[in-house]
Image (cartoon, rainbow, N blue to C red; front, side, top):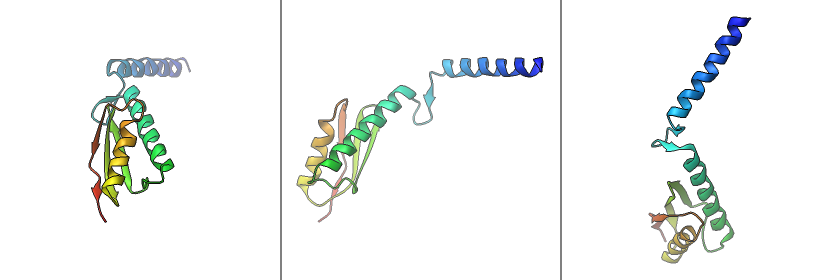
Length: 106
């Protein structure tokens, strides 16, 4: 029983050391856990604002965020809808840059 307890304790210490020295990298382009969580919050905020706005089809537009840069893609019915989606993203808190790749499809 003592050996099992020691093995578990050693495993815990080893895992903590490994995680600490790798700076908690996330597989997605070695992004840290903290920035990944921030980006997820930005994405959620942009999508929520789009869902509230009647002039933007939130279901037709995809939002991805990486290190504060928001990438918009998908389809819009007009240039006005595309521009409004970009404006919503730009005015969302903590957004550094917006890349608007939405395609206008009548």
